Length: 382
Image (cartoon, rainbow, N blue to C red; front, side, top):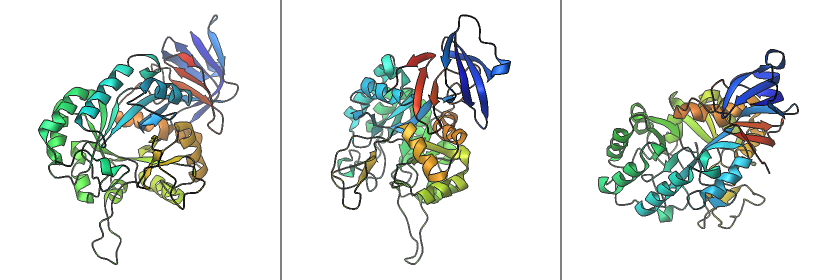
């Protein structure tokens, strides 16, 4: 048995000061105030030293970590991100991959999830195949221009199965409903995300009953459809803000480039704290920094000058969210752990609770990672 002591325990909407967490094997078996929890004799004691003990971060959407693509070097990428407090990750495969590359990426990530640091891989985030190539980085390498063809997409559905936790789609793509329906045959509870799209609000909302519950990097790589030249149009972002059913992913970089700090506050006000998910969307593009972005260190660019994801880890994303919006520590772990687990309906991660997996991160008040526990075992941090 292990006991985390002298910890401020971060819960969904409260904090237990000077708390204790008891762990048996890979599960939390009890937690509470020090006065109410007896540490058994012989337990391995982990002193949190007055820092915060919280659920491990869940990175719902990332392509890389530590400069390594997940689909190429899943063990190295997993080991790096784990040391930054991520205990569950859903690596993304992107629309610049053809069918064979998608299939290989799926197989390799499935295999990596069974051993070593790769055990934090709990599924795949399918950022494709059918998005709108007018939006997003590396659009020149979009590999799915021939249309929505069952003979092309069905092998992906069959290979990935329920290991695909999110399927990104552009609702305006012709015949996308056929693809959605076939994914739902394989997994009736599949989660769809509107992504790289200029869909009308009605095209987005029409797919909510079929499982569209998420907006990929909200306010990034989305279009605008003005009805009149003098008026601002409505499009994907407005549909996401309007719908109580849709969670909004946010990439929060240090300078507020992906999402302006005022927009972050606005999204929080509209969506509420229960519908916001922080992601890293880390990538390994190495295009030159375009004019006007001098001093930017946590964003990537492709060779067309487009923003191409970030260089963030989840601890830094939380720090930036705190800086830009004043969000408190309970809110940050709601955005970075509880909400993604709730979206995916995974009940034993994302919060400190009896019976939950002992995936725990210990951080200071600035979200600097001090210790990480994966399935009840301590991980050496950076």
